[in-house]
Image (cartoon, rainbow, N blue to C red; front, side, top):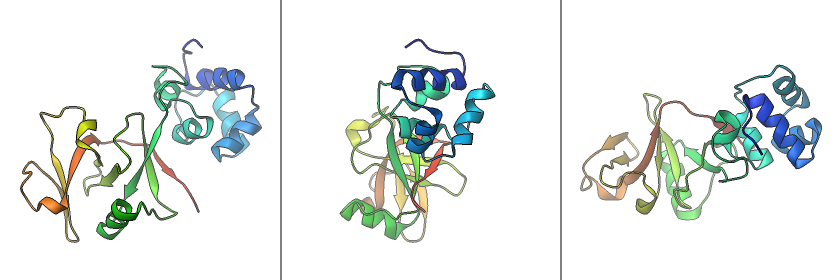
Length: 179
């Protein structure tokens, strides 16, 4: 499948490739049919719903949004954004996640216990396994306890509360799953 010029044209191409209607696409993505129709008819090049569309259609978010890579190449990983010290403990020990958890999309695999945390300044920190980090020589840690969360360069500081940072993001595509 060739890379199309806009998000709208890429979505049209993938619907054709999958042999599905706008209505079926909307159902798979958990969106109103009108949302899919608007993207297609208004020749849109961006949408807040891109993450849900990629997830629902099983296509690459990077390809859908930017036209790079392959549409059915890497699958999108949905990393939960954990919002409390207690919720983090449940996730890491029991893989338990609340129904109203928000997620961030990534095409990188940071391991089964990867999670994201939103700092007070709006930065999203994605933590995961050591062998999954992009630059192992220059890594930091996220220090999380019941009182604070902050980035730390000191791997010896309160070790049981440290989580290896794999990626930092300042803008993100959140997806609410559940009610």
